[in-house]
Amino acid sequence: MKTLVSILIFNSFIFLGFSQTVELQNFGPNFSNPVEIANANDSRLFIVEQAGIIKILTPSGTVNPTPFLNITTKVGSGGERGLLGLAFAPDYKTSGRFYVNYTDNTSTTEPNTIIARYTVSTNPDIANTTETVLLTIKQPFDNHNGGKLAFGPDGFLYIATGDGGAGGDPGDRSQNTSSLLGKLLRIDVSGSSYNIPSSNPFSSSANGQNDPRPEIYAIGLRNPWKFSFDKLNGDLWIADVGQNDFEEINKVTGSGTPGDNYGWRCYEGNNHVFNDTGNCPASFNETIAPVAEYAHVGNGCSGSITGGYVYRGTMFTNFIGKYFFADFCTQQIGILTDAGSGWSMAMQTPNIARRWTTFGEDNNGELYIVGGSNIFKITDPNLSVDESKLFNFKLHPNPSNNNVSIDLSSKFKTVESISIYNIHGQKIESISKSNKQILNISVKNYHSGLYFVEVCTNNASKIVKKLIIN
Image (cartoon, rainbow, N blue to C red; front, side):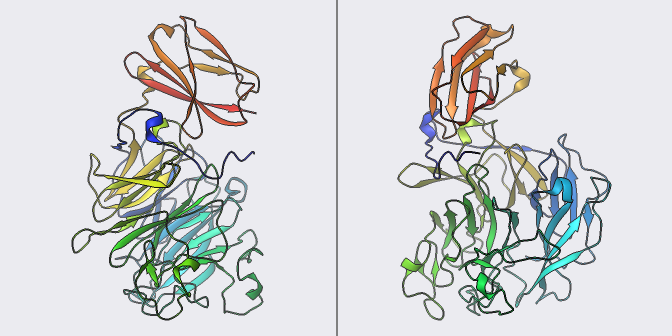
């Protein structure tokens, strides 16, 4: 597969000259403290409940009556503790392996974080209950547990850990490479246990030493509450919850650079000094500054970021290439847009207000968000797609490398415009339909990659299809 670009440039004015808004649509019944959404590269969504249950949400919005997994007897839940992460192996279809991150019930104040492997049973909707524990991390306090798991484009399992809790990282653990707390870890779980990838920054310590810990991939995180990989280019996005004044979003092009230092507890947000004693580097130039930050407003719960995803779906072309996140306290949803010279941030209060706890991405790249007990689908009210109001059209051949035919069917008279966009959201061609049912266009000068063909009707409905150029 060819790499198109390493950094996307996308401006909202490419499509229409209005400010970007989102609209939330309720998707499915209520859940009990849902904290994560995952997919196994099929049409199902797996909803993780904090108490230790994973349920399957079907494409029709119903929940299977039997949970996929129930490990409530192992999980210590409450506050920031519980079953917090779920990731399906890249080869899940054949191996049946998936991984969970939870805090155990050995203590309510000093639990262990457990990274464990499970497998699916002969019933694809029910998992086996046999657990293989891969990694145990002692927590000095009951908060700041991180919890996110995800497989990177390199096939390795990434694990986000908090700094151990309390406030202000009193143990100075995030900068301490002998501790797994306040880190992004990366391990190879393709074997029976786990191995250390040779490209990890401290992989040479894998011979039994504990300083530095070979599992470490990056340091200097406070409480990374969700990270994700861009489906298009593998860019790594980390949302890190702030302490006093700032919430931050970190982005690393590609799958990340081993050994990166994101600054905590030395710095908060974009190089704002928090506590520059202890294990701090000589200057902030030795740390990775976030691509975006925002300040707390007011007292109490005034800011707590929830990380999301870069939109790579096809239903809402105006979202393509934008990073979505939210704030638990302000109940707002944020969007980062790459304006070329930097990332611009827009915050908004959506049509439904909730304390947002997690995002999810389905196998088609469409986005979901969790608030309270509900799962909502993120939609664009300005350019919504409603196939029930618009005929389907056909693209053939697809993939193509020379010519493409657009068959508008017998209802072609309702078509207002036809446009082709590249993956950056740039309109590269407008096509005059000229009252023809079948339009033939040349694509021999298009670069290889993914494109979107958008057909709009005179009542402002539209439908978008993917076009792949070899």
